[in-house]
Image (cartoon, rainbow, N blue to C red):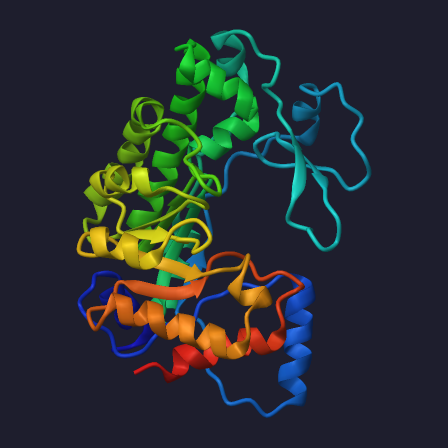
Length: 353
């Protein structure tokens, strides 16, 4: 099997030949890692197993269009993204953490929501997606279409979490209008990835916190479950074999049956600080595969190389010969992670038999 075939077989729990290596580092750690690798003779294989294709390109909306929705004065370095959400930068160490400003925060009518300049994919072309997907497959890698922050997160980024929670709990039509519009665009993107030849579509919305779920099951089932199901149904209607990865940080165990029901194939990241992988696997491992399980709050920054190796082996043993686990750090590796621990993770994946 090439890497693509191996990864797909593993995710479908049909067995595998090699353990994939999959991780991401912040720029500071990447620089340290590169320096270490150039000065040490380390025999490890951390070449990729999957590669992403570009998203559809929406119609351009000038930044000035979105500035009209804000009264704040932003500090230097603030960007307004393609949705119109403003992001003030964090520190260098937490570069990917920003303070968000929500353009719909003060909306009080459905008409305001419907008049908002949402992304427009009506004239988007999938030609580049198809071209890149073919090139990736020719390299023997799995093709990924990235669509995280699929519905819930994009919606609350626009509206503000507290506001959208209140809209949902009070059955305010603003919630329906906003969530439906974000869902429509997600369906367009998912269909395009499926037509383009993606093996995997990576969806996700953070619906868990460290020790509890972010909202009640009833609220999730009323508002979010049917919408994520629509997105997945549309993609699988085009390609029934496409794998659906779903990301949510935190404790999400009560939502797992719902995620299985809507068609999720692989759950990420199964943070060990929030959920026990063996317990989750014992209950759901015959219906669901997993991606992650190596803690970036604990094991990767503060464990020893031997502890990391044992954790990788332990979790792969739990998954068993059929596969069902892409064992990986549960999040971006931050500056405090020792390079030796990154190498220990890679070596453990390389060595596992």
